[in-house]
Image 1 (cartoon, rainbow, N blue to C red):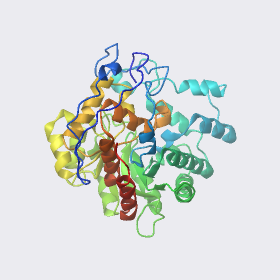
Image 2: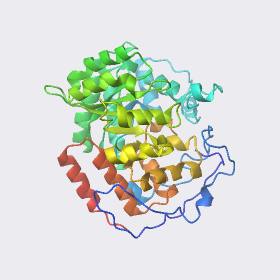
Image 3: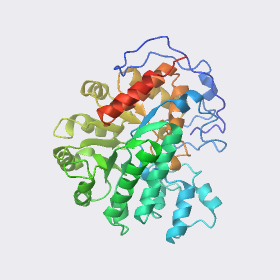
Image 4: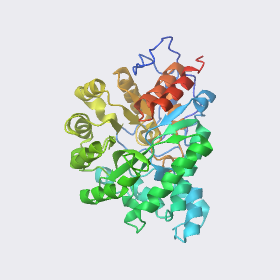
Length: 419
């Protein structure tokens, strides 16, 4: 979030009178809203500096428009534990007798208002908790199969409210097995949520098993083998259809997990991986994800990957290999100024890179969900309604949903009336 204290009401975005083919990911050229200066921070903090959030509002005064609210959405970058709301965390802590360091629910709520230190290894220790410290502290209340089921159902219900029609949530088992929670407790809880969420909320989901990259590699492989019966493999239960990388990637490049990627590919699963923004060696990690992993074939998708703009060959590689990026604009907006961040996103669009918009860890990121991330992109990138439909369609195309689900979602997008 920006530091000026109040970035106020938006102006409408600039309409682009251009017709784009349905199968084209290119958007642009465009110009920023006429009064883009309205959003410029009064205090320049510079690139890669931590930015203190606006205490008066999570969305810098932006309201989610009826158009964005009603747009059919696909979410491909969301960590299920990052959707654990303070209310559910408080409830589960009481139910499971898990002690919290907050005496009241109000104190717990206040703890979410901080902008975390993104990485102590990069920024130094300034006394604030890192995002990952807060994230894994929240996980402590998840103890039973019903807890994981309830977490999954709460997210899928929220999807219905935001008109998210299909989603591919990230999850892991390592953060829970190290606490003594059996892997099957995690997996069965999420599997039940996947099945019942589709019935109750009409939200289809295929999940992504993550290796925690700051844990020993062998531990991750053991976790995968234990989870494999729940994968979408012959005889499997069908919870997850892909693997990814999560947690702290400092000095943990993607190629360290090449054996895991090859095993997943052998099992018929998709491969994605986080390439965090402005991390140490960020562009190098994107390079490995495009050109080196999976025996040189590259990842099927890259999560974040914004530092691809740092090198022309990375943009070219993303285009020619048709590797989509799952961006989470608010996650970066917490640390980058408006006029620094959003031109980077438009640069990706103008370069013909296929991107889609997602939320990441919304409850730990000022409660900004996918609809808020899409609204920020719509406003600060100066996009038209047609452009936003194109971004929504990018999510459909980048997903690993069935052809039937994709066809239905594309029909919904075809039916939208563009102003």
